Image 1 (cartoon, rainbow, N blue to C red):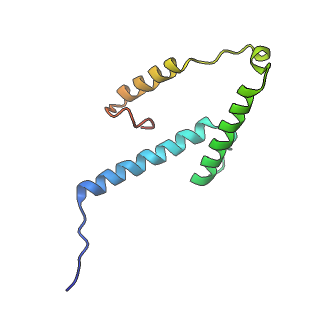
Image 2: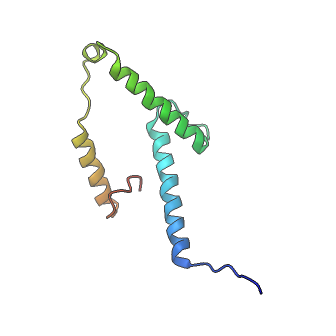
Image 3: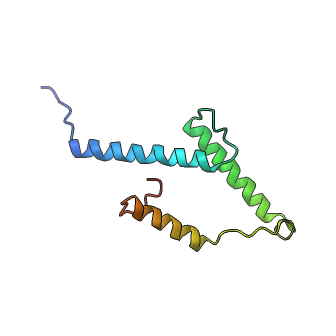
Length: 102
């Protein structure tokens, strides 16, 4: 008796879309994090490590007293950023707002 592997086309297609979304998200992260060299290929692990380090650095900057008054820069409110993400989703025909990187 042999057991054959049965491919389900719909699942293959869903997995393909999922992997494309993940790769798109990694590409977007690579664009957004300034510590990643743009001309060097980075592994997914390297990208995630740079993202973690960058978030850590941003948190240190926010926690440093007096830094916010000196710079005088104002940050974009999160409500504005969320509205921009929503418009991007609509432009790309993305009905699922949980997927941000399409």
